[in-house]
Amino acid sequence: MKRVGVLLTVFLSTILFAQNSVSVVDATMGVGTDAVTIAIQLDNTDLVRGFQFDISSDPALGDPTVSVGADLPVGFTVIGMPLGDYLYGVMGYVMGQTDVPSGSNHIVDLTFSNLEEFALGEYVLTFSDGTIADGAAESLACEWYGGILTIVNTPPMANAGEDQDVTIAHD
Image (tube, rainbow, N blue to C red):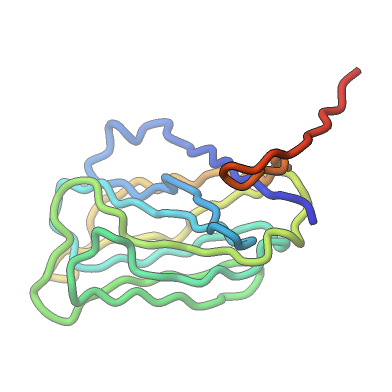
């Protein structure tokens, strides 16, 4: 069994200057699993009542499962749907008067499973057809930033208090 680690490179060319932006900000491996969860963040100065975007990924990753991010207010629903050709649609909305507050908000988690089956290397995640909207359902200006998910081998790890021999190849 190969051990898998994950690195995430984020495209942040002008994120500091955008009024509203959505970006891939973090990747974490589940403990004892072969899944990685990608956090999607909304940095906004406007109040946001809903969002929708498509994310494309390498065919090897397959479709992610989608869940509500930690910073969405109670009442928000997030759904995901495969769109074909390695595109996955994500939509977040609320039925009521709740807004995503201004600031940096973790809005969505995308979880890709079965990393054990993936080849080592880079997998590009890109946004397309993204929009965020205010309480009047008016579209707000927004910049979108994807990232590169890199899957690497990691050395075996010993359990706490346990000795383990490690062989390191070298020239």
